[in-house]
Image (cartoon, rainbow over all chains, first blue to last red; front, side, top):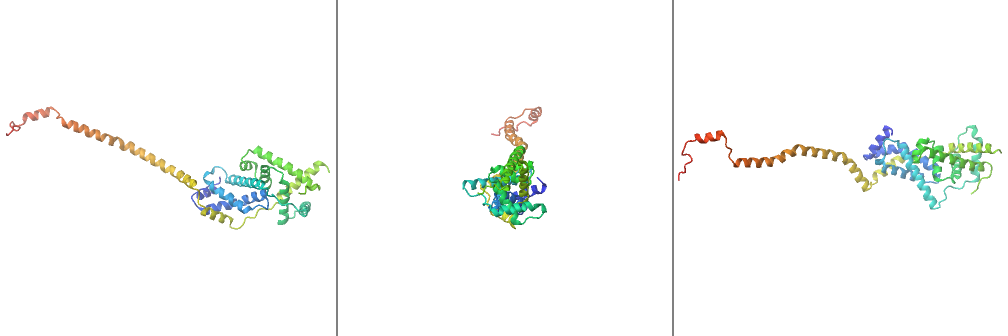
Amino acid sequence: MPEDDRDLVSRSLDGDSDAFAKLVQNYQQLVFNIIYHYLGPSADVEDLAQDVFLRVYRSLDRIDLGRPLKQWIGRIAANRCLDELRRRKVRKVHLFGDLEMEDRERILETYEGSNQQRSLSRQEAESCLNLLHEAMEDLSAKDRMAFVLREVESIEYPELAEMLNTSEVAARIRVSRARKKLRRKLEKILYGQAEVK
Amino acid sequence: MDKRKSSKKADRFLNFLTKSVPEAEVPPFFATRVAARVRSELPPLTWTLQRMAARMVPVLTVLVMAVTALIYRVGPQSYEAPFEALFVEESGSEEEITVDYVLGLLLEPPGEDVDLD
């Protein structure tokens, strides 16, 4: 763990809430991204992120100071997302909004024109996320998490394995399996055989 | 279309999607709000006790060591003292007969021990 993080952890344990605020600031983008990209735009990202950091605070005294804090926080965020997904499935909450045909067309047009190095608008980027979510819906919860952490958050395999509490080989297998399934699904979308829900 | 080609195109499209998703927007003062929540939140009793116990470990260790050292240094003297007292009392009850003692008796003027009655 970097010296700064170690210092922030020990000061937070001594009740210094400013130190904990600094720690949250250092890792808030990572936590927000994991939740947002894994659960989608419909998720209450802020509430879930707050819950993640409260869990981090409560487990600070059990933290292994010899290991990076990023993996520890990433693991808590990943577990919280998996719990949330399980809860939604039990309650049969529809996970992701149906993607409008217009959205699909817009994404495909954007994709075709992406060689022009044009930066995407927020709306176009959100449509990409929606489409990705639609494609990921058939993946198992853990394969989806492995894929999001590796391909969207660009987390290296050793860190990813720690976050998923698994071996590096198992993490690689999960990502590869997810990619294969997603590729097949996107082929259908690209060639007009999309499964319209 | 050739299956390999379509698979490659799908792969490129997947890469495009993963690189195009937007970053999550973190609301302003999120960290401050979380810190305030942590401050206001009463920690569970067991957690507090655990932390207190963990902090007490070094103090208790030093205390036990100090007490042990004190017992070791002070203990033997205090145990000797009562026996010493007994020994002195017992030896005091019997007169020790030495050469000086006998000579002293002999040199004492006679009649000193004579009963006046």
